[in-house]
Length: 460
Image 1: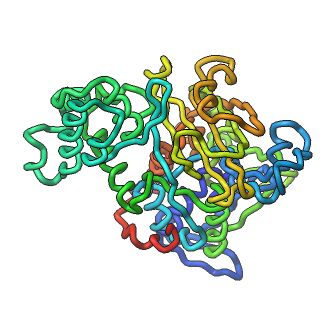
Image 2: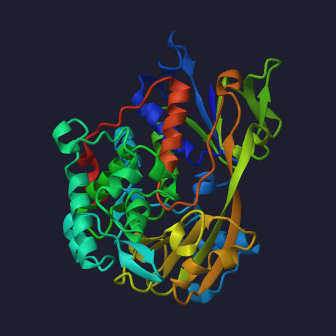
């Protein structure tokens, strides 16, 4: 049996495994044959255990009373904020790229039939204390107030190169091997200014710091193409989509899919302890005096604290507002990226906003988040540049959490541990971690070549 503990991003992983494998299910016995893990077609059971009384672990969505209890220790929010059940506030807010890996996974697994998505209204970047719409094509570059006249022309030429680039067509490479040429060398060919490089690298390619400039340019170009393709998919104001009723819908949708394939889901299981044999291999998980025997455990870092190391801390502010973010064209949902150089930081800051348009708050209310990799012990002061962009707020909560990565040898102990969520407001880095875990567990690389139009109806 495989046991999943506090499945936040783990729901993504096992929804892939379910649909990528040959399963045979007896719904009466709830026993499942899983070929990739079992060459002799032995039965395999998947058990989800969560110490919380709600789905999704750290990536859940809370109603207003739960939110108040989480941050203030009581469940009595002010009446003027509206009805508690109309709120679905994400604890780890993230948008999805419309053409990104997570959307492909959702289509691949069929989870989209349990979900409805809506396009995000705007994508913006911060420059010299002002907010600007992010240009993603040569046409938008010519119209953008981010750049002067001559810089627009240089940027347009660069955007055309990126749009026309085809990894399988040498003619589009212009004699540049992007596996050898660095991103900095590619950009210098077009003579772009530092501020332009800033928004291209951070708001289009979605890098959260500048180390990408010294790396081969191929990944940088692919990231830019993904942004442009995602933007073109719905021809809206941003490349992002977001589920109605918040991200808490995603793990619940997987729970439904898991049940179809005979999986068992157990909430409110306190003090889950992973058990090992004399050789250090996992043999089960104990909770409330009962042990579920298993030969693989998939979990977040909090369940195996001796097999992870701290690599950073995330600071975030959660805000309830009665208006959209100023200077975002009255967008009901938007992302604003504040590049590190604009703030004198080592990494970017992110502003995320959604509202009643996505059914996450009552009519007229907006939920905004400001997040960043913590570089000080004062989150209020550190997040001030992002919070100042929001204007007046009805309520604001500050929070920090540590980030961990696994240090164990998964082949030795059969424990597969996810990394903690980072400060970004998109899922691209999270999906990379999920794909790596999938390969470790199955020994296979997942093929995500899917028909993206398969989910158009749901997303529209």
